[in-house]
Image 1 (cartoon, one colour):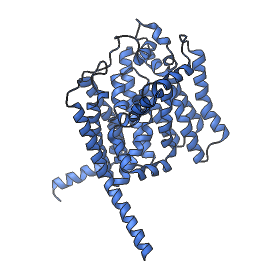
Image 2 (cartoon, helix red, strand yellow):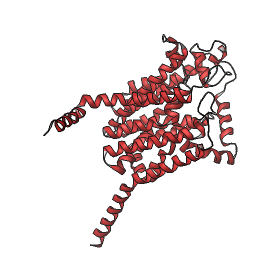
Image 3 (tube, helix red, strand yellow):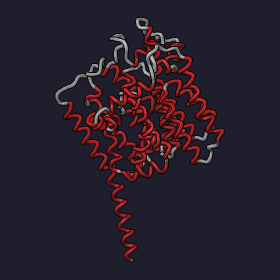
Image 4 (spheres, helix red, strand yellow):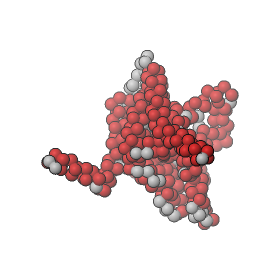
Amino acid sequence: MDSSSRRAAAIRRALRHPLARAAAAALLPVLVVVIVALVVHWHDGYVPVERGCCSDHSYYLAMAGGLPRHPEAARTPPFDYRILTPLIVRVSPLSPTAGFHALTLAALIGAAALLWQLLRTLGFAAGAAAGGVVLAGSLYWLVEWPQMDYALVDPLSFFLAALFMLALYRGVGPLPLAAIATLAVLNKEVGLILLPPAALYLWRTQRLTPRAALALAGAPVVAVVLLRLLVPSDAGYHPLDALHAALAHRYGSWSRAFHDLPDYFVPTWGPVLFVLAAQPRSLIRFVRRFPELALLYPLAHLQLLVATDTERLLVFAYLAVIPAVVFALREGLRRDRLVLASAGLLALVQGCYFEYTRLATAHIAGARASLDPASHAWERTAILAAAALALLIAAPAWRRALGRRRRLRRARAA
């Protein structure tokens, strides 16, 4: 063996070392989120703060002390009930703007790292888990938009949701789970959707006792009630009125409901959903194996009953969609390296889709990117490329299924 061969063998052994794999697992979430942060900084730009109060980020900035011209924004429900992120920014030594940027970046990196750990805990190999992190990084509403509209509570909610599900699958007891869920609802009431999947998993694993159920659900619900009672708010907000207004806006007519229906899928998740559409059996097996994760998807849609956003709200179900896509990739390709490579290609195509779709361009206040006449052509090209990739990924699974059917027919004929 010559020196170059020995050197290559030494490099392969070093890469297989547990410490090297741990370093790669820690570096990948940082790399994915920082790349998107650089794209936002150099290309997209940030949503401006001072142009007309108030939008979501204005309320949270005011709660953190960063909007002195509009103090009333800090008392606007339901935003003023979401106290955790503004409180962390307020007590940090940074300015409100820098504090939100730092917390957003840290929370997104932490959420990506916890997603990797969750996928590993669910039984996925390291390459498949890395592919899941890369796919998550390509979701516009999950990673890019929170950094453009940086003063939001969503990134910390993504982190706490991933921490909760990871703790659940790692066998953590009901009291720590209740503590994480309480922090999640102190940040945003969407944390309540974590409770039914946890109850389902504890019931499936025969760990759901009355005491565990009371501890798990009691603390978050009490926290929500106390926030409504103790946090000072300006008059005029009633949850039932918000429910009625959202329902009237979204489902006031059949034409409006039908028009909004496509927004529930590709505009939120991108063309990566074609992987699930091409392998429906894999999706069914995923639901049977991880029903608590699958339950997160319909529960995330409950937010649509009280808010008019669609894409930004539904992305809270990323802990259901990303594992399902990785599961389908593994079912189709089997080999870990192929799963990682196909996830990278899908993420690249998905990034192109979100770059050229109207949801991610300059009509959003503050973005520097501009629409060009060919943007719709690029959007269609990205969708077709993703569909073609999905078919290629599904082809081996279809071939194996057809082979099994033929063998069964021959066995019956014999």
